[in-house]
Each structure stands twice: as structure tokens, then as C-alpha cells.
Length: 440
Ligand code: ATP
Ligand code: MG
Image (cartoon, rainbow, N blue to C red; front, side, top):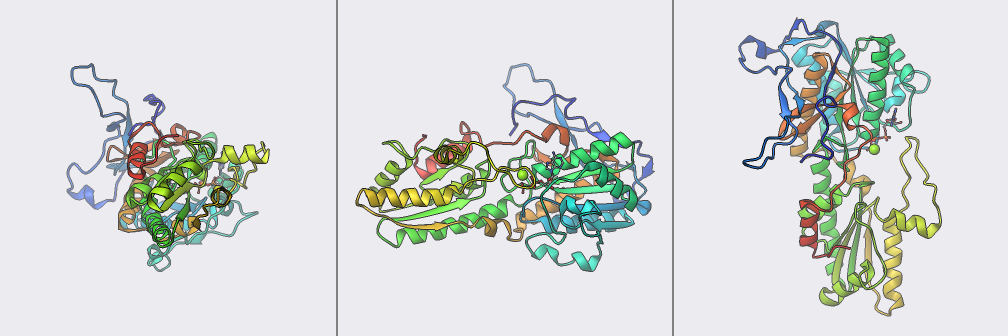
């Protein structure tokens, strides 16, 4: 599970706003002995050791959970929730669970919903926040997307903190991917510079599963389940015609976790192409020749490609060396799915043995479904612990799961270091075994 390199204990230290002197209003305080988490409780970073060897120095994340004494007076607190970046199954569940934890569990005075991502934290650009209510959130978990809206594009953290202070907000929950957590870190730093009493506590969101120190979060399993369904349809198409090829493009800008997981879940894929493994098309060992051999043997094939795969190849072909970027600074990818469709069709037409190719690009469909039961449970856990952390005055962190425990991950320890699927490890081996494809 550990990402490399192992962080130092100092890098995993969590920032706090100040002392915790207020007894928690939680029902657990009235008799739930042992329910509270002490601040010095850690979850070990690496739990694997070799018998007979000296144990490694214990490095660990701060364990999340309710504290007996908290920093904020709930009845005088105002929380705000913002969702940023791309859609992901479960965003609405997180919003709803954060709201319930604040209002029902702690009795937080008010919970604001920030409209359309970080844009809504800049009064010159965004819409006014809304006050969340029971009736507003009661049924949002049945829908994909986000009630609050989302956007891309940076905001000046000084403007954001001005706005939070003008609104009397003392807790900001940032739900989003790597970019969102980088933005949250910038906001927390500005808060610290001013000595303001505002907690910034994130909930990580990533369909690509590419956030460092975030082994898993909500939405991923729902996306895998949906992607598996799409692959099964592509397989049906492929087996129904002579020399049928089903080509499916899935999300995964830099990390192939979704493509790899859906491949393993489906069991019907013959070639999986991810950003972490170089794509070779030509030559005896290239994809086209291998696909030809597979079709000669079995008369059908399913190919899954992650959207970020083969970008080097496309760039070299176009002679375009300066990547274009979106409003948030993310590289705009060339369409590897369409390119592969063209190259595969062309290749087999050229050798006089054409294929019947069906191309399916379900990316937005996969990410806009509502959360499945597993992910709904995940959103509740993440939201619950985010509120516990914020009420205890912890800041500049997101909630993670590590070794099965909920933990506080300092934003500075995660930001700017994306997680990748290691082609030397189990998951990629499983893909190679199940597809029967060899390493390139
Ligand atoms: P996804 O994984 O769907 O791309 P994301 O959270 O990474 O989600 P982005 O659009 O990249 O989505 O970022 C979300 C928001 O965070 C955007 O408004 C973006 O401008 C802002 N942001 C990204 N990086 C920074 C940064 N270094 N400082 C301040 N804001 C940032
Ligand atoms: Mg991102």
C-alpha cells in the first residue's frame, strides 16, 4: 500500500488552529467510553515487516475520529462546502453527509453551499452561496453530479479568505481532486498568514485514483462497475460479428487504475493500454500485430485504452511539443481512442483482412452515475471524519483511508505528487494474466 518514497514523521504532522477546550456535544461523550481518539494516536505508514529484522522506525498518519474536546463552539460556527473539478459518483452524498454531521451531530449553526467550485468563493465572479437545508439535501444522494455545481480555473486565495471572513465562515470543506487540494492548501496557507481561525479540511475525490496518500476514496468503485458494464457490451458487439473488435476508452489522465480495475472485473478484455506503460503500435511486437494474431486465433477482441495513454506517440506524430492546457492548467489530451480506431481499421484494411470495429467512449457516462452502495458508505465515512477534524480545529489536511483506518493527511504531504499504477506490481500483473497480453 505505501507510496514511495516514505514520508518523514515531520511531513505527516497535522496543523491545528489552536487549543481544544470545548467539551464535544457528541452523544458519545455521555457514556461511550473509549470512543474518542487521542491526538497522539497514529496509523503506521508501513505495517509490513520481516521477522527477525529490526523494525523500521514507526512513521504514521494522525488517526482521524472524534475528539473529546473541540476547538469550535458549534452553535457559533458556520461551515461551507465547495465541490471542484470533474464529476465523480458520490459528490452529492458527501455534501449531504457533511451537512448532516454538522447540523445533526454537532449542531453547527449554519452550513453554506458554495456555488460552482472555487469561483463561488470570489464575489466578483461567482454566484452567492446557498444556505443548505434538510429539504435541499434530502434526496440529492440519488443523483449523480453535484447540487452545488463545479468549475475549473484558479482564484486568488487572498480573495477567497476575504470572502470567507466576510461571510463569517470558520470551516471550509473542499471536495475535489489533486487540483482542488492544491487550491485548498493555498487557502489554508493564506489563512495561516493572517492568523485567522478558519479550518480547511478536504475530502479527496478521484476517479483516476491518482492522489498520493489516498489509497482509495469514494466514487471509484461505482465508476469501475459502470465501466465493467460498458466493456461487457463491447464484448457482446465484438463476438457477434466476424473479426469483431470492441474498443473502449476509459478515464485515466495519468494513472490507469480505472482501466486496470475494470479489466480485471470484466475478464473480457484482451489488451489494456494505460499511461504508465508505453504504447507500441508497429512491428511484430506492436499492438496491431498482436491484435492480428489474437483475431486469427479467436475471431474477436476487446481493447481498453485509458485516455492518457499513448500521448507521447500522438505528440510525436503531430510534431506538437507544447501541450495545451485547460482553465485549471491540466494538459488537454489528444484523443487516443479516435486515433486507435483509425489506425486499427486502416491497418487491417491495408493488409486485406478488415475488421468490424465498434468504438465506445463512455467517459462522462461513467463519472456521472450516482454512487453505488459501497461508495455511499465511503462518502459517509469521509464526511464524518472531515467534520470531526474540522471541529477539533485541524486544518490544511484531507481525510484518507490508510491500512483500513481513517486518517488525517496533511495537504503539503500529498500535493504535487500524483499516484501512478506501478507496472512492476500486482495489479498490472493481474491485468497481464487476465488479458493474456504480454509486456511491451
Ligand atoms: P479532477 O481530478 O476532476 O481534475 P481537480 O480537483 O484536480 O479534479 P482541477 O480543475 O484541476 O480539478 O482543480 C480544481 C480547482 O482547483 C480549480 O478551480 C483549479 O483552478 C484549482 N487549483 C488547481 N491547482 C491550484 C493551485 N496550485 N492553487 C490554487 N488553486 C488551484
Ligand atoms: Mg485533477
